[in-house]
Length: 460
Image: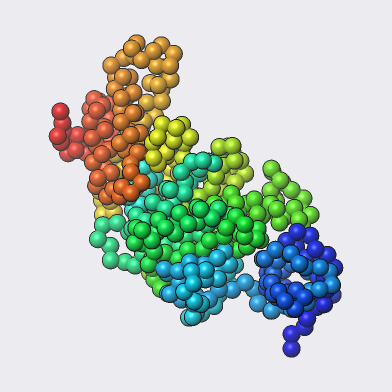
């Protein structure tokens, strides 16, 4: 027989405190009946002696200290799982909002999950093609990797996220099953509608599961959304043997929600007011990616975050960089020049790229082309700095070539259409056409055999 607790001892924002609690546990879900008219659910986030601090998922509107009845369910937050989740749209805690009815689950799982056991992990190898040259060519996304996008307010990360979802595939003629789990946290209504419309118009909605937490939804719900999405991704990957790409936007909204709830709980703040456990909290999300030995399927993550004031040393990008395997950095200056996507390739990197490209994966010359494009574009910065001092007319012939190469690289390689889906062959061929603008002796990051095979093609 379940026990109901009458009344509350305190209400503080999204938190309520219940006294006299017995046999409760951390993360347990509770049901709250408000005045016999409204039912809310909450989660126990702190226990002290006989007191329980409960996060209420819906707001605490209409709740008072004496009009509430609270019942402990004895279960953590769970979600029903089924292959029918694909093609559906849910709210931030996994309730259908597309008018297509409830999901009939094959099984029910705790959304909190667990990071993959390091011993059971398999090293990532194959790549995921996004159709975006700056990513596929220079910061290749590998199955099982976590590769964040560092953006800023006003930069087109939403358009980039939609393009990645619309175009992502396993590359080549792969016959393995592929799907996307998309989770948006704290987005405005028009942004959520943009994502839905984009996926429907491009015809990919049938292999996308969407979780939408809007800006006017309860802040506490925002903390559950990525966990719900990742639980679905793990089920599809390791039970249905699919390769799943998880796109999480915006992790900054998640961190802001964590800070707000932490402040309500009276916890001592750390850097920039964020709780001291921000790093470990991020890790519980990011580490739920990878490949398990002996199991067909993988979970790959692209978390997207907006850097406050474009500060890459801010705690959110800083801690994310420690946990993940590289980053893709969007640049405000390139955006100002109407380059889309405005990816600054120099601070961007993919630490797992080297093991998932080349012969048998993409193309034999991929690593050489990437190395040389990085090196040559770095020299563009030196040539531009020199030109700003002495003027472009006074530059040497080679430096002038680098200036020209830089403009073409930004416009033709980095820049592409919002619906332009390039194959890896097209990306590498564009790279070679740019490298041929430079004298052969300047291409010092690739071996002679590769140069002999590709440099002279269509030369002149």
